Amino acid sequence: MIDWSHFTPWSSFAGGLLIGCAAALLVLSTGRIAGVSGIAGGLLTPRRADIGWRIAFLLGLLLAPVAFRVFGRLPFPRIDAGFGVLLIAGLLVGLGTSYGSGCTSGHGVCGLSRLSLRSLVATLAFMAAGMVTVFLVRHVWAS
Amino acid sequence: MGVLSAFVSGLIFGLGLLISGMSDPGKVIGFLDVAGRWDPSLAFVMAGAILVGFFGFARMRRQLPQRRGIDARLIAGSIVFGIGWGLAGFCPGPALVDFGAGIDKATVFVVAMLAGMLLYTGLERWSDVSRR
Image 1 (cartoon, rainbow over the protein chains, first blue to last red):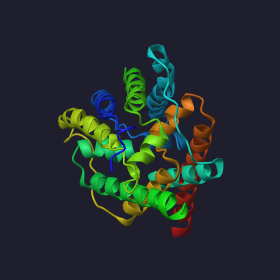
Image 2: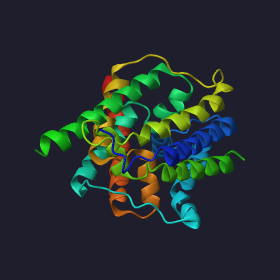
Image 3: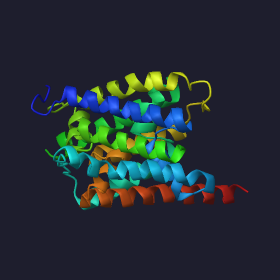
């Protein structure tokens, strides 16, 4: 059953086009992959020649809400998870994206854009795991 | 030059996440909740991003290093990431955008995520040392 009240095909597609433009800009100008987990993780074990573009990209990401506010009201994020769950989830995301060398942006957007089989496998794995987790939390645990 | 375009890329990336609705964990969980009231929006984000990305990467496809081999690390790591993603509805990009917007819960998530990445670095060093 589709949740028509929340489904936003056009703005989601438009936002996706922008994300694709951002990934294309980064790879064409610097030869780097716009994978957020990899860019952030690379800063934790920094090599000097490698720091500048990483900080610049992350700074752009962090300042996006400020730029967005110029045009309109920021959407308010619905975060149901409590602080304890957020801590565990953050740890799992940090560990998992490091071992799997990528997240939704690196594997899901960039990897699939360059037709990488590795990234397809990774994307199917984290989507399936995410769906099973939500199923367990929402439909098994809750009842 | 590279630094400037990296900044602009990050900015456009973040705006894309905000406009697409993906900076809202509730919307991401709405996509992952296939057994409930399903919100397919995330699939439209991916479609738009890959449509542009395909052409962007087309010229670079041969130049970029390609890692091959699908191993247990890739699959297990991705599953662990997916579990965390499903628990909170946050993946790294949206979490950083919401952290930039000053959302407390995103800050907690980002700190824990960086701790997870550091833990990985530590575990890798330790296993390197013990292998010698």
